Length: 310
Ligand code: TXA
Ligand code: MG
Image 1 (cartoon, rainbow, N blue to C red):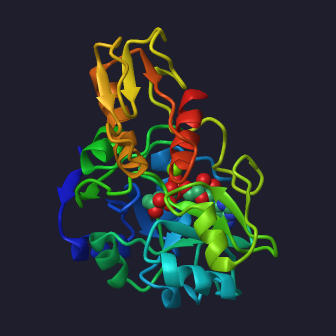
Image 2 (cartoon, helix red, strand yellow):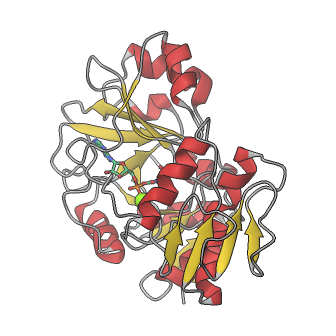
């Protein structure tokens, strides 16, 4: 079992010394380490069993703190004014002298950067003067964690420290927007929607979530629980339990409701928690009611589709 700590300055100190520490963010928990230290980065890949070709994103307390590593263009300045700190990751061209290890960047000329809004994550980042790489704190292809308990259950045997910051409020990984090319593209849907980004940048934004080349991590199989998922279920779907949205089908005896009141934000916040709970309860199959593909519903359906694809 990992040691649960609650002091962000201690977490920052451990990370400075080259340790890997799981930290809370408003989206999901991350496995944090010095991005400028090959040893620390190597440990992250080993703990997650993550393929080396899948790059990590770097976290900072501000855009200014990132400017030594990446090219701060006008689009990121505009977006950050509205969306950072918050659940948005920017893909940008790296600069010469970029401190982010090439291992962490998987040798790409671009890097993902994010400024998280979680208060404890912010205190960790304000205490250091190097990029902090942090992928989601789950083994590759498993459910993302939204609490310290989830991280401990998934990775406790391989990890020394977890900074406990309570439940992640948003509950779904950050939106990833690629600002490194002339054409802006969304590589991963999240709480920050395509519409919002398009209205801030005043341009048409394309969604390119299925391209395995641009975002190697966006593989179809991802976020899988160890039971079968049946999406867009109807009341007669044969499954052991139901993940409901809105008014639950009465034909199921075991049900968890993502949001009885049809709130997509509430559904996103509950999604990974409920999928973890069903895993702990040991079910074999889960029927999932249809979820509207609008706003953050797009991100929810994206994660569900990947989870069902295993
Ligand atoms: O909400 C989040 O973003 C969380 C928290 C901890 O910050 N982090 C997270 O990291 O979800 P990770 O590694 O699980 O997902 C980041 C994704 C990966 O799929 C990776 O392939 C993609 O970002 N990525 C990283 N660098 C990239 C780059 N230069 N170009 C394209 N995609 C990149
Ligand atoms: Mg991940």
